[in-house]
Amino acid sequence: MNQESVIIQCKNCRTKNRVPKQRIKDDPVCGKCRTPLPEMTFYSSPVMVSDSTFHQDVLSYPGPVLLDCWAPWCGPCKMMGPILDQVAREYAGRVKVAKINVDQNPMISSRYNILSIPTLLFFKNGQLVNTVPGAIQKPEIDRLMAGMV
Image 1 (cartoon, helix red, strand yellow):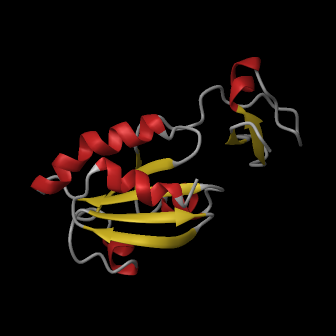
Image 2 (cartoon, rainbow, N blue to C red; image 1 turned 180 degrees about the horizontal axis):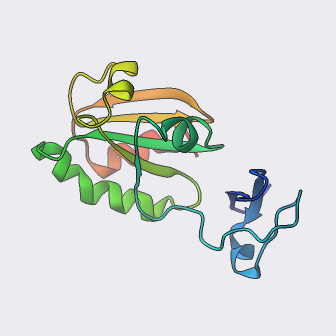
Image 3 (tube, rainbow, N blue to C red; image 1 turned 120 degrees about the vertical axis):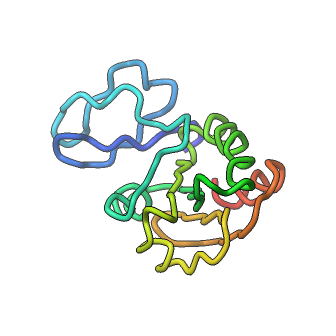
């Protein structure tokens, strides 16, 4: 497929639909049940994830996910915030950027052995492909994303 597309999950039957980006505004419908698909389902800002939504928001997502493991009291985490906002805007429709507060969500922190924050987890089709502890700059994130998109 030569054109960029986004995956939109039908709210009615939960089928995942691939829609070319230029057709998003054409009121697309689900290929299975014909229900109108939500207009804006690609993410242009980070999505908050919790222990209870992790499977659906990260592991079940059909494409790449960049998960920021952070805490509100962490200075380096706060410095990463604007960088991840920019990454979410630039990669909207290709990569889902998500954030999980490790203080409020200990199950995921424990499952992925998060020992320092911030830690970035890179998932592709539900599989963890890379773990990067510590604050990093946007060019490094871009380099790491190149292998995922």
